Length: 227
Image 1 (cartoon, rainbow, N blue to C red):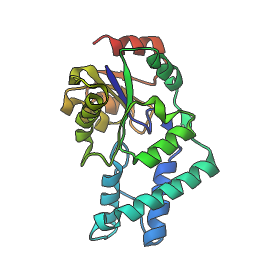
Image 2 (image 1 turned 90 degrees about the horizontal axis):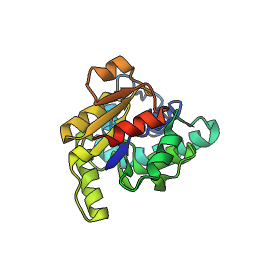
Image 3 (image 1 turned 180 degrees about the vertical axis):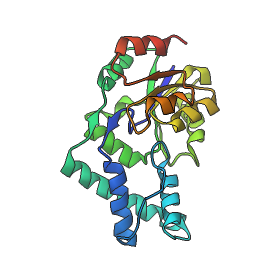
């Protein structure tokens, strides 16, 4: 079984350090008038967030500026994480990851819209070891989030020498985008209302399981393994 966790709002909270660092980076490069107002961020992959923000601010060719933005964002995020020290693990995350690490039949991974360098920064700032996650697919790996589950399954097959069926893949996330990419790929989804979306908003997208948080380790673990 492969269990893929989102990062922001699922494993941890940064008190919006990521979105603030994105704005820092964009204003460093393009001036103080740059804004992310009206740009959807939660649950989306970072390159698409940048593309939408660039277009909204009148940049004709977002792709031409992407690498500079990405590098500046990483610098500003590192600075904010050092200065603010506001990253926290969400309830139950540490206990659940420890429990899953003891199960030979389970592989734990990441499925996230973050860039790899900034995603790892957040994980380390929360006190987790990125090496816990044997599989990782990032926002740069696909054109949109729906592509990421299949890429994770391909990575799994390459790492372990055998394929895995979508029904044996569980995506844990806090936004409708997590639910959507799971359903589009034939995977299950555990939605957790610890991010920007409330439980009723998540319930409307019909995840297989919806919880307020991950604190009830025995119940969540039992459900995960009962497939």
